[in-house]
Length: 307
Image (cartoon, rainbow, N blue to C red; front, side, top):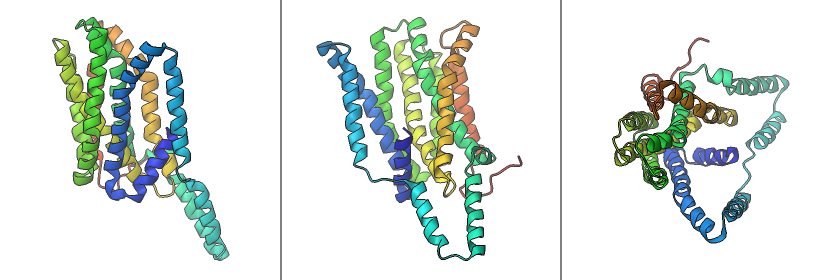
C-alpha cells in the first residue's frame, strides 16, 4: 500500500489540477473490488471449495505485481541525490554549505514532530483517523447491532456491506471532481458531516431497511472523504519531504484500525447495548468536520502554533 500511495502522489504531482479526481478514481476502483470480490469469491468457493479462494487471491496479487513492474521507477530519493550531486559540482564551498543547510532544513520540516506543529497537518491526521474509525465500526459494532438489535440475517449483513461499497463506487469519483472544482476543504467538511449524521442516526434505526439507509449515508460520506483527505495530504506535504509527510495520516488511520475495535467493544460492553459505541464514532467524525472547518486555512498561510 505504501508503494501504491507513492505512485498516486507522483501522478498527482504531475497533474495537480486533477488531484481530487485522481484520488477519487482510485477510491472508486477499490470500492469496485469490494463489490465484485465477495460475489466472485462466493461463486468460486461454491464451485471449487473454500481453499480455492486463496489461490484466486494469490493469482490476483501476482497479476497486480506484474502490472506494477511495468510502471516506471519513481525513486525520488535517488533522483534527488543525483540532482544534488550534479548541482554541487558547480558550486563554491560556501554555496555547497548553504545548499546542505537547506537540505537539512527540508529533512527537519518533514519530520512528524515538526509536521504536527502545523494546524493543517493536525487536521489532516485527525480527519484520516476519524474516517478510519468509521470503517472500524463497519466491521465491528454495526454488524453486531444489526444482528443483536434488529435481528438481521447473515445475508442482510452482507447486503449492508455491498450497499456501502456500491455507494462508495458512485460517490468517490464524484467527490474527487467536486473537490477539484470547489476545493478540498468543502468536500472534507461535508463528507465527514454526512458520516457523523449517518452513524448517529444508525443507532436509532427501527429495522434493517432504516439501518441500510443510515449506513448508506455514511458510505457516501466516507467514500468522498478518503480521496479528499489523501489529496490534501499530498498538496500539503513539504517539498522534498513528501514521503515521510504522507505516512503521517496513513499511520494515524492504521493506529485507529489497531485500537479502534477494542475501544468500541469496551464501550458497548460498558454501556450494555449493541451499537451504543456508534455515538462515539459519529462524534469523532463530527469533531473532525468541525476541526477542518475552523482550523484548515488556505495553503501558504501561516498555520503553525507555538510548540
